[in-house]
Amino acid sequence: MVRKGFTPEQIINKLREAEIHINRGISIAEASRKIGVTQQTYYRWRKEYGGLWMEQARKLKNLEKENARLKKLVADLALDNAILK
Figure (cartoon, one colour):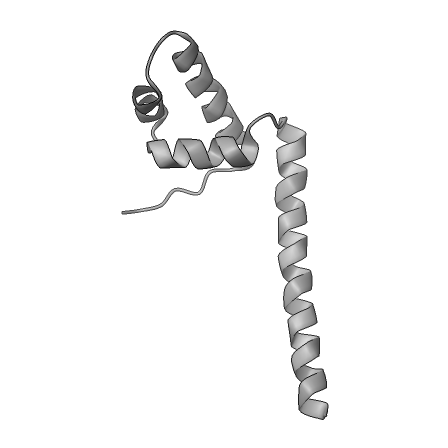
């Protein structure tokens, strides 16, 4: 199955749309179907992005990218250090 890469802004908009459907009395399964994701994806997004504003979500993603880059850099340096010993 092809996986779509949603931006944090799109995810937050979809979560807000789902909350509107749920508040109208529609089940979570039906609301997640209406926004075009599975129930599991809805719960995962809600866990990660629930209560965040757009700017906060952007900062979170940028920090995650920077953290991954720094972890890779530390791993490379540790490997170089081990080789030198």
